[in-house]
Length: 194
Image (tube, rainbow, N blue to C red; front, top):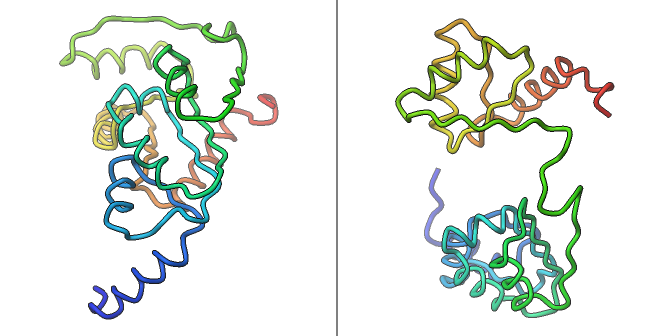
């Protein structure tokens, strides 16, 4: 149900002058909301950027720097990145105060317990090749896709081919996610992986 103009104005006033505890957003949308004064970061003291390397690669550096300018007080900033290319190191040195790098595992190297294989497959043959690989690989298997539509398309194809498959992405309900997580941990024998 849409809010009346008066309620919208009251809500906007409250959000702007009172601040918000947690905001999860993409850089472009967050910058837009801040510029329109939908809320402020006056009380915000913590900024977390996941996939910071991808964010910068996708051209969001200017938006991130603009967002940083909205902070009124000192903040703790955490950048998560699977890689630390020179571009993100330079960004961290210029945008943060005394940045510290924490490496999990060996920096710049793959986990030795993971076997990585690269197969070059034409776009139109990928889904069929995926099915061939799954037929050679015992479950459980985790497949990552680029977007929600790809996740749904892969799940539908595999179900049609008789492969038990579940899909997880942001459009699924939280209860659905918890049910799948419980099932996944059971299949993976969670206690043996701790």
